[in-house]
Image (cartoon, rainbow, N blue to C red; front, top):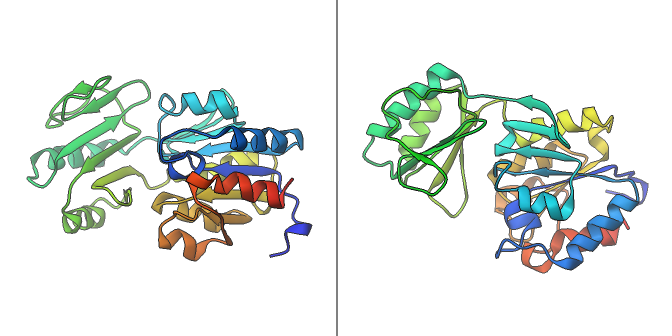
Length: 253
């Protein structure tokens, strides 16, 4: 791919293990590169499985123009909510009830627009057992289990939901099928009137794969899973070596 002829107008980045180092910090060098990209008129967007609250500290540092949070359930341009996607009520209620009774499930979490729930005590979350209906619509839920076969059976039966494994963990994120980072990028790009061909995206895990494939340039981190590297146009250095910032400085600045 000839980057000399690419007019990149938006950078989209995952947070954990991509923009963020393993210790969940952003280096001064990376911050300076993003400022220089902004000075060139390039838009910046986050695309993360984190929620708005847990990504707030990084928004203060980078000041993105757009946010795709909770894996694509909420899409914002600055403070303007462009789209919210909720779990289908009937399926999510049945699923949470089933998860609460299955012996392989270690814990369950769920999130609405304004509240977080968990089956185990966690600070900042309401502790419940998920055996009865919740009083509000949910954006997202997750569970921890080592039983991959059981999760596959759920995916076959709950076809309006996506079950995404977080690599190197026992965590599965469960979202509405429509709620993906890739769809979020399309919504933000359309809002800013930027063609997808002029978007560069960075990621490292399963929920980044479609985004890397659909954007004009998809870049996998050096620490990314093999599945990301296989679909990427480029592979940059690792997150702990400021891989994204080094790529941006080399090719865009």
